[in-house]
Length: 186
Image (cartoon, rainbow, N blue to C red; front, side, top):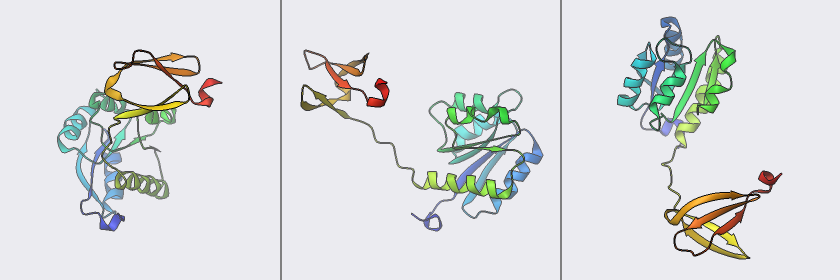
């Protein structure tokens, strides 16, 4: 679906403890007709409540805030993360941690309009191709030259064995071992 065919706007929450930083993001976001700012939050605690209730598509999240920082917000949200999170901070020492936390991008203040536009374009692409997650129901197992399918619900546990993964399966009397990817075996 092309961006202009999208029926609903991208619901966005801005979280920053600095009013000027929130205002700057708000001004840039309001230039885009596909964006709807549902709330601006001045603290991590406020953001938690708003993200849980509003279920936004996109959150611009400051890293350093009093009481509850941006990483705390994501941790406390658990599985209820928005589809896209962009960290915004003035501190370059946090450059890797946002990606480890599942963020889509990281804006280092001060950023220019071109950098902001690239981030927003990437965000729109992520949200546009968002499909409901499919649940894995079975896996293919190759053992002694034969391929069989095992339901995930029938696996008791998986054990690492050198360059193999051994599946201990309820319905099978013995263990099935599958080679790991060659890159994992050194």
